[in-house]
Image (cartoon, rainbow, N blue to C red; front, side, top):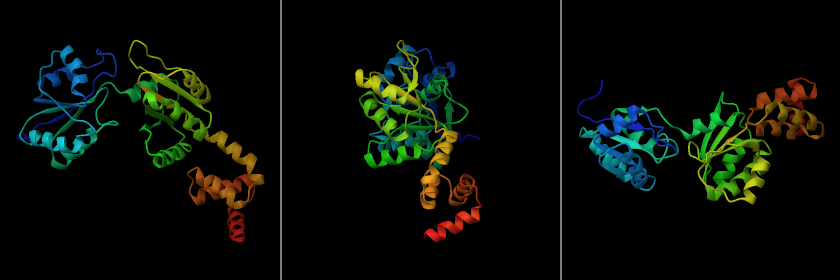
Length: 285
């Protein structure tokens, strides 16, 4: 039961390009709340004016997320209803909205999310790649060490991978993905729901070559094919003969298997028992 003395935080999904992609309920809530917290007030003003929303708007973004969260919380505590919107899509995905939700949950302030546009889901369904399960990574870290760690983890990801990327980083990102993950299919989703929307499916090597020739423009969502475990296993089987037991074990450990499962696979590769593998590793030590 909602505490009538507090307001409610509404997470309102907004269009990712086409202004018509908004629900009736979203417009109704935006008109009814006491305050709208927007990532970019000038950008959001276009949408709000289009639908005749005259509610006061305040900024809430990455650079003021902590101090402004306290301001918004105070209003919610005093009974004001607040709608949180991002520049495009669903709040709290790759933006500071998750902080507000966490703080409200901790204080028992009601939070509700209005379903609507999401660049992640739009790109995934448009890609033609497997949508049965997927891993959303957002933007790759700008720090070199952190980015390398993420890419190393993605090498072993079997699910379809969805990434965001800015145009000025596209060339570097595609080159890094090709170098680290190897050549695999990728769908380059650009300008989703807009007039110049495109979502070509190609190999990573083709995408890297394409954007070496032309300058990336617009907003991008990258949908990458997951690791082909059957192919990886076949490669492992063809290469193990030249490996020491220790290297063979490390090959599977690097792919995320625990030691017990890795030794089981080694035994299958070599046509022996797991005990033989265990004893052989002890002897190598």
